[in-house]
Length: 317
Image 1 (cartoon, rainbow, N blue to C red):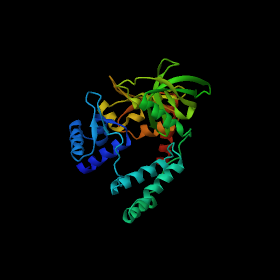
Image 2 (image 1 turned 120 degrees about the vertical axis):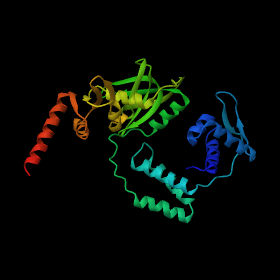
Image 3 (image 1 turned 90 degrees about the horizontal axis):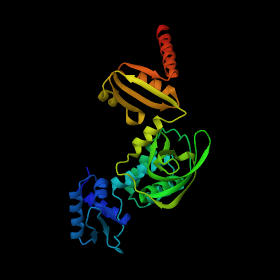
Image 4 (image 1 turned 30 degrees about the vertical axis):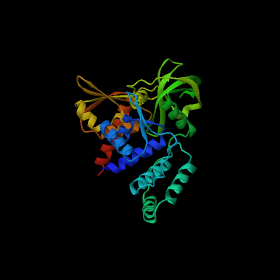
């Protein structure tokens, strides 16, 4: 549970880090409502800190230009959270320069008091990450370039290599970036195809900002679009299974990133694209409700072989 003082200091940190932030952005970051944000802003102003507010539906808060606060030290919870985040980024091999992560860790430790430093060092020595290396590598700057383009609603140029090997060039309006099952994706409007498209970042051969701008649809869900694209991707096995259960029961065991669920007269249809059918077969065997594999036939054959091996194992005892 965050205390009001912690949230107050967090607003100061955010206003120092960003030129300006809207009330809704601050509310989302602090997990409070707009009225609470306005109360915190008033408290800061009463303390003599020059927080200026722009009125109107698109209004924002900012510190008066030229005003600088003295440096704020990390409290214990912030230092531990920062350390854990940096360790996770390093171990999951996110597209960040390893030297930058190690440098940030070293700088963070240098300003810690002795007791907190021992606690943070203990975390690093005690925690072991069992993480498979990412299946693909790509240019570290791509996430930074795309994220800035998403924020500024700036068009980019990219040269892309499709799964079959052919390359194409296009201008693209990036609406969001998604990390899913070891791969990075960007979704948005492709001017070459004149439609929404999803691109895997490791297949981008070249990427650079363009002068053009765009307006991101307010209701666009980047994660939903990327998952939908993955589940219908050409060149992979298209899995379709009839679950003889209710939609609510199916949702309890099938997370959104595992596939698409569609309620039908006989139950629920489960769909996904799969490069490796073995993983899908194992998933289906863990489910307790009845089901029928509609396609592909290779999945049905794989389940028959797995059932036969299981029966032989039982009979041999």
